[in-house]
Length: 71
Image: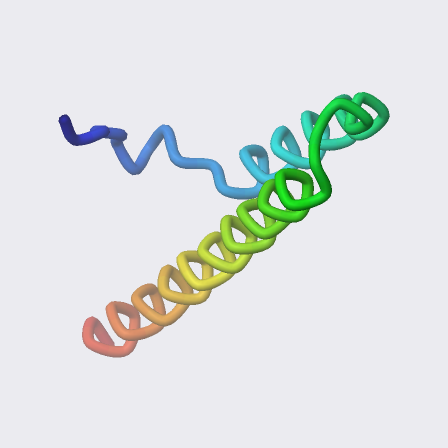
């Protein structure tokens, strides 16, 4: 099953802020998790941030390319 999301609903900055808030909220409960699980969670968080940065950069490049093509 594929996840479908319209571009108008995509807000990377808000999504990253929500992810960081959730990670902060559960940080103190980490005692029940193994170190490997905690590191995996942080790795996922870092990868999601990197993907968001790449998407943002791609949007900027696309906007510039479209702007240059229209001139």
